[in-house]
View 1: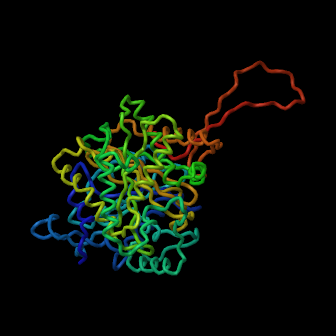
View 2: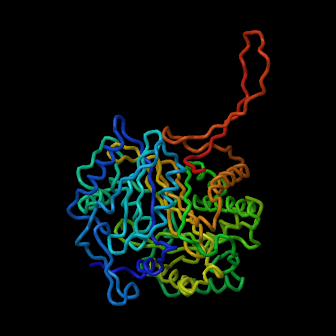
View 3: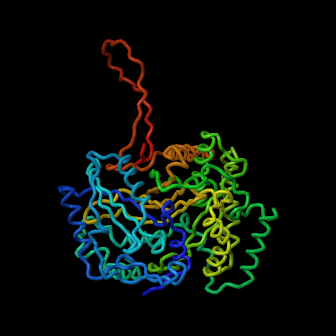
Length: 515
């Protein structure tokens, strides 16, 4: 049996019917030429179930003592594992649109995982247009963080479109083969500077107490106003519709943008990829709040989870800390807003400078202590630590396949809680960035509009630095919307040798998008 860490156990303690503590993802695939969807998905399901020993935590359930989750908690093998319960074949009314898929995914994400069984589900979903199908997975956050979930997904796929799996991708043997390939350098991982997290500055194995003491002094300075760029939980966090009590109903929307397009804006501002993502989200949120007549006087603050995972570590459950970023939503000028966001992120990173990963984890837990007290008391919406979470999970750099089916996109769904009714998570894949936005259906109405406002914010940044806006990467399997402005009809003219000119404008938006 493996004992859960305090961080892992915290996700069990914080869970309720209104606040499930699992992370999910929906991936879109295009069928191989000549394949029939029901037969293909049935083959995938059979292959998934064909395993003698499963990769943890897929074969393990939670074991507690007399104190329940408040005492020691362990993973133990489930003696009555039923893979037919965990792996499910579903269908949308054909031809299914992304709207219907995302509505289904939102409902599935809002239901609790059964505690008496291994804490995961996988849904194989057919019925989509253009020979696409989807795979929706959800796994309890006590078992995985974003980085490990990417590794688990990566182990199931291949960059070779002709590769066929002979053993279950959930098997322990398959996982060991994947780990061996990583050690030998045969599996590519993202190493671009634009997607590096604050963990890059945590170089020391053993930090010093002085570094932790300095960090605490900086936090105290932020409360008193001496550290104006350093944002911290609960400090000047405005209340809004994002920060009330939530219910169990969820709304999910997704969108894809070009990685190169976002990176180009970051380079123009001498900033990172992450800074640009935050600026995109900030501009979108500002417009959303303005349109709902509730833009706060103080800027919105976001939690930015950061990975503490060491190179080569693919087995840890959760290895995360976090910084607070000021989104500068109270600043109208996009250039000034970007500068304020960049300064806030740099101050958050600098506060961890010289500390070991363990020190950062302990400091993060100490800063989370007020939230842990306010949440069970029902007061977190009155004193929110942040307004929302924005998380960037580095993904896979190659186009991937599952038994010949091409993966077209992978969209993450994370956790929302009382006091934080909105979560934006993005995963980089090949040359694109896939955004997944999950929100409380009641607290954040019309959340699908946020996608349009984020695109507007990106174009605003491009205009500010003189970059020509480019459409997002187009795939044959992903629809793009084209609007053509036709000229008024005129009477027919006699034929001439001159070429007929057209004056049509085409506007292409990133896809997919639920409406």
